[in-house]
Image 1 (cartoon, helix red, strand yellow):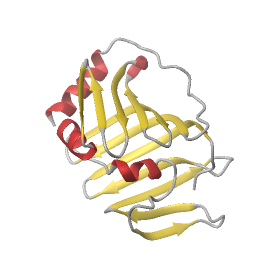
Image 2 (cartoon, rainbow, N blue to C red):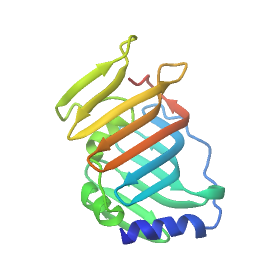
Image 3 (cartoon, rainbow, N blue to C red):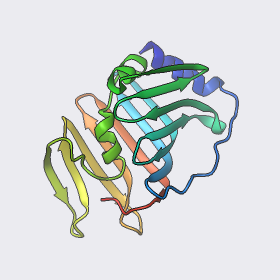
Amino acid sequence: MKHLALILAALALCACESLPPLPETPSGLSLQGRIKITLPNQVVSSNLRWTQTETGFDAYLWGALGAVTTRIYGNSETLSIEARGTKASGAPEEILQEHLGWSLPIELLLSWIAGNPSESSEVQALKRNEQGLIESFRQAGWLLEYSNLDGQGRYTRLLAERRDVSVLVVVKRRADSQKSL
């Protein structure tokens, strides 16, 4: 929790730094929006920029006035977190737990953010809408819900919940090579 408090403090203190435009990804996806993480004693909201390829992802979290505070990048085997001039790398779940106080299964997250269940873990309670697009499912103890579809049938709202952790992603802009859901 101490590290999370430092990240929140960094949101208020960081100097402004702009991000390059949302890149087109011929073999992946990029999205930009907001993320809200709800923990038992804390709620953290931030801007989010997520870029994903077949080999991994690169995410930026930043606060007011475009101040970049945290960069999280890697793949299902190695994860790095950079914040306020420090960097930590290692096994994804361990690094997230150590530095943020909670964790997500990165190997599954790469599929979830694209709007699909992962093929590497059992899927339960899969629900589809009238058009056959995924609305929700359970995987690895997490409930995933997709809603607010855009004109191309892609979600603009993703909610991942498990026990006392909730992660809400609201997509404002998206560029991807294939239709999700």
